[in-house]
Image (cartoon, rainbow, N blue to C red):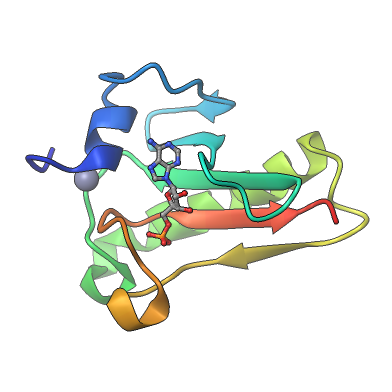
Length: 108
Ligand code: AMP
Ligand code: ZN
């Protein structure tokens, strides 16, 4: 848990954010400022700043994020129409919250 990290607070249940899915590794919730009809965030419980900070042992977390994102796309019925999976990396890459997260965007 990183002090003053918005997503650490969310994954630790310190906010009223509704989870669409959660397990020991990650949580999924809706983006508060959606860029598309479906815009979910898949967020590991572990505080990792960005893709740049991934360690070798984090590879199972990343594969799990993607696998759960695929399941969420099906659950949100955007799997057939198509969707984007996106990591913004650091400021120049559009990252605003420095706790790793995968955007699932679709439903156009
Ligand atoms: P990024 O620009 O990749 O860091 O994305 C951060 C995303 O988090 C943005 O799309 C925000 O709209 C979203 N966001 C920020 N605070 C919250 C929150 N409390 N609940 C849900 N989504 C949030
Ligand atoms: Zn954090």
